[in-house]
Image 1 (tube, rainbow, N blue to C red):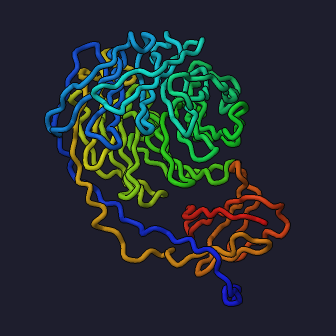
Image 2 (image 1 turned 30 degrees about the vertical axis):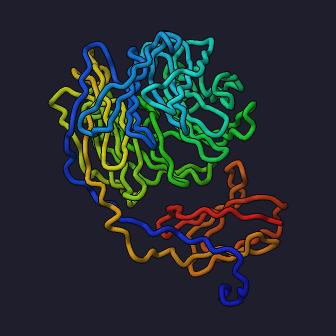
Image 3 (image 1 turned 90 degrees about the vertical axis):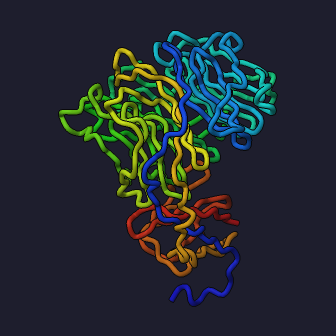
Length: 466
């Protein structure tokens, strides 16, 4: 009845057509780039626009491969560590014509946390524009870039924010170390490391290793503020490692090492809840005590159109998980066997190719691997063939926007509605309804998050209160 009295439609928010997850079936090996011991390949990244592959080669520095002939990779350039403060290259990210490297050994924590910027306008002639080093040991496991700022996951040194507006003059902005008293009141501080991260707007989602997931507002670069935290309760009595994360709206997909992949609803940062858990090695059983686990999840890539998560899984190598239903993630396919003693650390997915980086782990902690290098693996990226013709939410609209009073939801009654402020904090939670009152709210920007009948968020709408 409420919808019938509405005569003005100011903004219509349409959902994109959804696709059904389609398992690619078997993954096909194409080629290897082997390394000789003790050289390592921690992770790799295909250029966003050019036929080049960038490899974080640890002690080898940055390796750049020409993939113009896709089945015949050629080493186009190596930028050695002596041009990178003599520090290991652990991870990398691309932003336009620049590559950002996370530097400093993360395994024995014998090197400073550092970062380098590489001009890759012409990848075969790439060069270092600047380096920056923190006066503190622990290395750096990841770097992300947004606008003029780089965010360095500096392991025990926490989150470091750098101004990179001038690519030839990196400037320190601030350092933030999350609270170490969560989830354990008596933490082993050596295991609290800033590792994986994602950034959406002013919110940074940080995997803090044994410290679980931390949600940090970075609007004020000088003074980041934690607004949410979470750790799987079961892990309070077991080894825990929140390693890496990818985001899809308010859903966080997080690799938690021997405990697989956890899917969290982080729409309300004050009330983070588990949506699903892919736990293929039964980490909750007494027989799995981390060191003997059949797999260890680390890096992951989300192919949103296909609703598939690709994960590097240690001696299990590569696993693909169907997340078309986030509440019931399911194994889709995998590559490699546990018996061949080859183990991955990182991976990238580009179109129909997977680039997997393998490491030597001679001591077998937490798994054994006797081969290092890069493999290219093909998969059947055909999910666009399965786009559904009609989406159940395609007719939903939220209006008026801007508003001075009520906001209406047309053609659907969500199971729950959460109103968020600009720093991601929940300020109102309502059960089933199709009208929301903003009359008592002050003027400003808000976000309406809608949940389906299964309690899963499916749309977030920005609302202006005049």
